[in-house]
Length: 101
Image 1 (cartoon, rainbow, N blue to C red):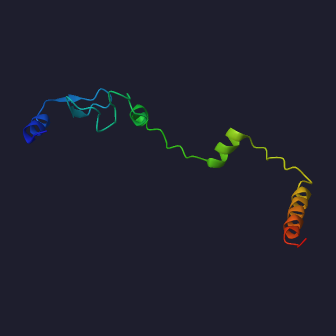
Image 2 (image 1 turned 180 degrees about the horizontal axis):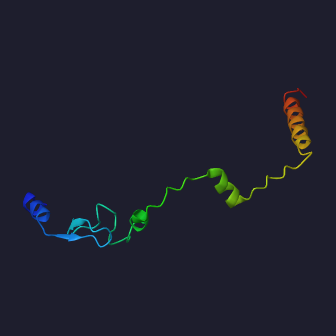
Image 3 (image 1 turned 120 degrees about the vertical axis):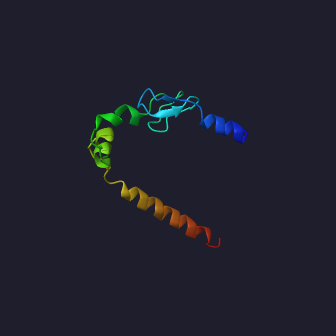
């Protein structure tokens, strides 16, 4: 692209954005003010920006409770002894591997 082409693009007559009314070059792919473009349509900010809605704060604990329920997981009882017994058996087998026959 040459400098002549770039300068010519800058001097082109302006159009107005159909969403926010901002001036933009005729061949612009997107509005620099609101983000409206040909491919994705209007940005979320452009749709709600003029409504003056308060910012919503994100509550992670509430999200987890709503999505996964507020109930705690039920922990099975008396399972720990199985792991202790498994560890003891493995230790005995390990020690027996080093005993001369």
